[in-house]
Length: 480
Image (cartoon, rainbow, N blue to C red; front, side):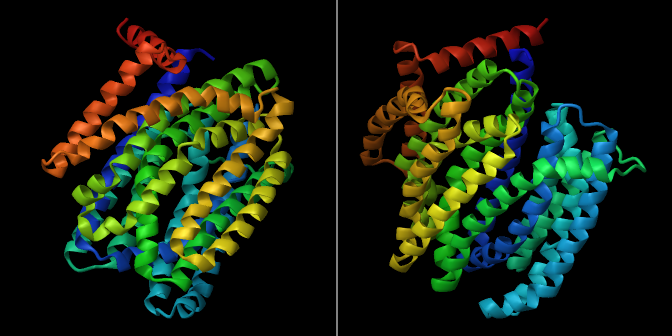
């Protein structure tokens, strides 16, 4: 597959994710100014359960369709009908158990919120196979229109309800509207439609690969949301809101880049699953290039955290600054996780993928249960410990499979991280200038870009040269 096609699909996916996240980010700023942290804390408690349920829809069979070399109409239609049936069962579970969850948190309104928010599970059953079809065929341009349409509509509904005093309902309506409009647009722009065919043997074949990825994702989501459950139960809703808001800012940046790379990388790697040399090259390029892009963004955000939060969310959200900085450090190394795991999935080793997840979650739960007694901040710091342990665990199999181990990977990302830290050291003192925060932040961003690019040119950074060459080739081809 040529570099132009890879870059084109990456750019469409990145534009889709960046556009959606930018709109969501602006909407979240407006909502955060209108709503109290307690409202965000309440919706976070509900999302713990719906997010875990969502894993059953988003993981497993969809990835199996993408990984399978010759998946056809029978495969896609079989998965579609299976998803629909399964989503109905999942929503029934949410509907029945929502009163018990409301009693657990001591808030009767949570029952109503959950039953409405659970509708997103039903809609996801329709959307999931369309997403797999788009990813399999690298039609990421389709995602652009559907995602932006859903995000704009959802943001508008959320703001209107928040201004009308809707409180938590504003956030619930935003979630439901988003996936509904997103699915409607995707359904109208993607030509694929389910056919009246179903194959139990095909389902078994796909499930034999997909169930391991499903269990892996389920473990990951349960582990992630276990923190939310513990904070919401042992501490206050405001503590949970600060923790989540601190994660949101760096996650907006990382998820855009990471999701874009992840979406394009898996189908491309799957096409080359029998060529170990090609897979290693792809994995290495993904790790180096992603880190080169992510590291300066995370370092820059960490050094400007107080100004960013004060300007964007007002001083009432300054309690999230320490969490934001911790997440910046942890998420900076996300490319190692993503590229290594994609290589393992592309080779069809979902059994190994699941094994890694079990090992990581055992370690993570031990660290979490140890740290939770010492406060929310201790729980956040524990993420740094598990992040570095997970890097080594995820990289371990590819030492044997691709002859590309963790130490070699660290060597590849080291230049980008060092350059980012140098940039951060230079821009940090700018905050001491006695001018408005907005002016300080603008100067820091501009100075950071100039320093990073100038150093990249001076030190002849390989990732910078690679990105420039790909962009030049793409620009030339589009002007022919």
